[in-house]
Image 1: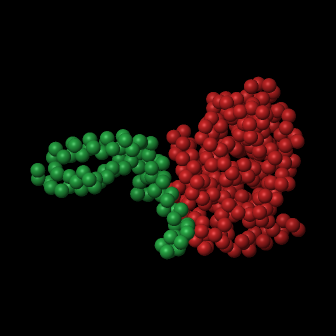
Image 2: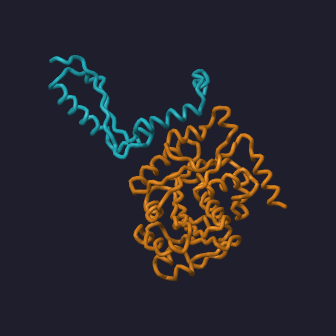
Length: 263
Length: 87
């Protein structure tokens, strides 16, 4: 059974693309067949985060307009043979595609993948409507900041109005040192305000910047963020994984398994 | 900044309090003018039967029940202090 997941946030720059790349890569590493779709027409970025920017021939708009077959536009990932990317168009705008076309394309692709992950653009306009049109469930990404949480709340309302009721929360860029001194809302505060089930807590980790520089998603690596994204993937699959203690840093168990991975 | 220190309220708590108030009005798709009209009409009807305090009465539309985001439909809450039941 395949599942179509939209990664959305309302506000820009909170980590939608990073979350999409890492969840997609993580699920593929777990043996699932995954398609990542960049729906941010005009501002494509998922390709660079994945390190696949040099392989693009056709894009989402080409598929929708019938300039190519869907298969021709899918880029196979460098690392995982079951991971594919459908890049967005860079020279067009959001109005090049409509929600009905998205639904049609997703329904066509659905039975070929275990997971289709849609990286949603910021905002609540047509790009957002396109991204959520074919989705079964949503991951709402926010940071522990007033503006991001306000936008997330608006997005949650719009998802519910569009009959998407399976919505989970990813809290990104958590800084435990700031929470400890009372200068940042904790995950519990954010969950309390948004009343959504929490699926992931990702610490503010400089390794994310390094990974993006290199075009290599860090999911599964022996870093705090890498471990956090891997846990999100397990929870997407329905497995119960305890939340990391961000204060202690990498847990003892992660260190042990890290040693085994290296060996 | 100094005000915050005097109040001994952390920026975390300030953010939380501000958001809670902000989201109540964000979640309501109802203009303040319309809310005022509804409030006045409700006051008019109830006033036929009992004496109420129209100055302190409050009405609010919310989607959040006592257990968070649990209500399927938005609900109108009215808080109307009764001054005198027999009129």
